[in-house]
Amino acid sequence: MEELGLDERDLAIVAALHVDGRLQWGRLGEILGLSDRTVARRAKRLIEHGVVRVVGVVNPYHSGYATPMIVRGRCVKGSIVTLAGLIAHRPDTLWVDILVGGTDLCFVTFAGSRESRNAFLLKELPGIDQLADVGVYTMLHSFGDARLWYPRFLDEDQYRALAPVHDRRAEPSSPQALTTEDRAFLRVLARDGRAGYAELAAAASCSESTARRRMRLLTESGAINFHTDVDLALLGYGVEAMLWMSVLPGALDRVGRALAAADPVRFVAATTGSVNLVCSVTCRDVSALYTFLVEVVGALPEITHVETTPITRTVKRAGGVRHRRRPSGGAEPDHRR
Image (cartoon, rainbow, N blue to C red; front, side, top):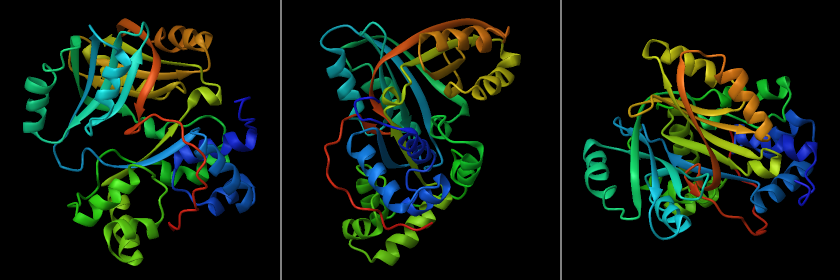
């Protein structure tokens, strides 16, 4: 944070973009009480330095059959960074994290059909020679979506102004069959979720009005999700961790909802496997993590076992492989809500 000289206005912009990565500079300025020019200059600087990155990806529930799975394993030979990088470049992975100790990793993957699920579990996963002690946890129910967590740099009025966009569901309201043009849009959005209609239209060889109309349909139906990847360490969040918990079955829903309501929690899901609740948390420091474990987790007696594994390095988040961007002077997107 000191290296980039971020101030309260920068932090508020980051928080707002985390809620809505395609928010126009003008509207963002209205919410934050800043001029369009100030917001545009500061936001572009944040994007260019990799503090915040927006990507658009197809909703994994879009196909009507989706198997979200959390995979945890240990690297037995070679470099964990190399292995994590290979997994991160798979199109079906959304998150890839290296856990404390530098030998374990965790990743989230989606299978879009029963056939792809079986191929992954029976052929592809066993074929990764460097990975041992593999645990696969199928997500049965999500209590919290990481897209809906945001850094706490907005006041309540500002947050409420963004709330209609923030209130998103995981499943599409009405599935939309992806067209050739849609897939061209997605290739662009995977690189830059703030790409404007002119760029999208050029990629799909269609008119801007067609790109605008189709994008509105895809986003309103939930077929496309926009994720904002934030470099949390630059914002003062120094500790991320995974919690692997065993909960009494009758209390699983209540405990999941209670954890999802806690500020440090980015994601929590009921799963199959050796544990039945997996949780991702983000804290300022180890002291804050300790407080969360004692005051929040400790207050839920139905949790019978907890394993806490700090995240050493994030390799992929929000569907995009982590990298620092070089200044590029990107243009203001021309979308309209």
